[in-house]
Amino acid sequence: MLDIKLIRENPDKINELLKRRNPELSIDKIIEIDAERRKVQTQADELRSKRKNESQKIGMMKKNGENTDALQEEIRALGDKVKELEEKQVELDNTQRDLLLRTPNIPDETTPIGQSENDNPTIKTWGSPTEFSFTPKAHWDLCEEKGIVDFERGVKLSQSRFTLYRGKGARLERAIIQFFLDLHTQEHGYEEILPPFMANAATMTGTGQLPKFAEDMYKCVDEDLYLIPTAEVPVTNIYSGEILSEDDLPKYMTAYTPCFRREAGSAGKDTRGLIRVHQFNKVEMVKLTTPETSKDEHEKLTQNAEKCLELLGLPYRRVALCTADIGFSANKCFDLEVWLPSYNTYKEISSCSNFGDYQARRANIRYRDKDGKIRFVHTLNGSGLAVGRTFAAIIENFQQEDGSIIIPEVLRKYTGFDRI
RNA sequence: GGAGAGGUGUCCGAGCGGUUUAAGGUGGCGAUCUCGAAAGUCGCUGUAGGGGAGACUCUACCGAGGGUUCGAAUCCCUCCCUCUCCGCCA
Figure 1 (tube, chains in turn brown, red):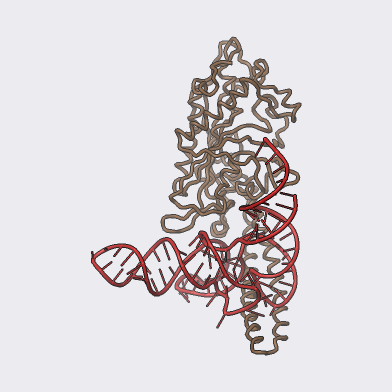
Figure 2: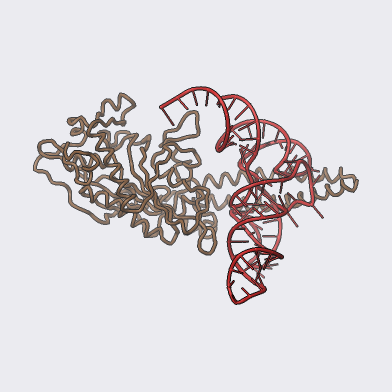
């Protein structure tokens, strides 16, 4: 969440930045509540202070055998007043906190201003769209023909948008996961994490999924637990509520997890194949850094994700998300988009975001700097990469005229075969 | 799941209704002593939110949330977590 002090001191600046996201956003209400909240707190503090001193007097008087009835009655009345003010303060605190939790991060100054995803500038392009001497098939057709993804039975077992990988398909999916994890741990310096796949409400609030996006997640009925929509959630929250040493930073962590998303509101979108499903695999990279280094670390993290695509030989481009398109908690975001022949366009396969101190403030992740001062860390993350979409891109881009699919060189030691 | 024990500052640990302004120790920082170091001695040492130009000052925080009371770390209730034993289990 945003820093209330920053809001208080620079209301116009914050409003201007928020309106770059969406003209309807404003912190005016928060400022109003903040002023009243402080007034009430001052009053309550003063009364509490008085009560404390007077109560101590009663203790002394009783020891001396004096009568305290009148004084007790007086303080009882004071106590009622304190209670009244406390209730008011709690209410104002909660309202303010809720408003802050529902206010998105302010975009970085370098985030391009725009009205929709159409305004996302392309930063770079690697490779060029795959050309075929025959009419290429979509991955959903190829996968069925080869028997490597059983879409129908996936639906039977669960629901639409659930998939069943089998045989070489299951093996290829696992190979991709392992390739990514090995790359990030062995070449890019990340620590491998295998987190819980369910997280509680506090954890979900830390990274920004709650309270605003509850309907996007699967929730357990009898427990305060949600299926994670991304490894970002458990991994970023590993150090929630803790104070790290500056020597511990930066932290590089990578995790494979399945991701569960209800995809509410995307009915009719990407209905076929592996592109948009309720459960998919992803390898995520997460960094905790000092404020001074987060921009550099963001660039490096994005390059780590690009490396995945380059080693696989998949053509892609990098776009900078504009103010209308960046995620709720992010101040800056690059998307990597892979060339997908069936869509005849580039399709998102990684999202690399810098959150500044927005998540750290929500999750209360801090560090002690060289001068002993306690500050919030910066958090970053990016997909490295979405595994299902990588699978689809491999199937489509490396299909041959005879219907076979060539496995990229770097995956072969994990698959044990070079062709499907 | 059953029975018991317990959650206090960096850590250990006392406190069981009123000079607790959380004892004492430990760790850390500083000073002193020393050629230097150790030991000793003395001092400082949490987080958050208010107020103040500032030196400062007020409030809250003893797992979390309620309650009792003039007053709660301390008594009561609910929940969470940890440990021990038993049961069950991959």
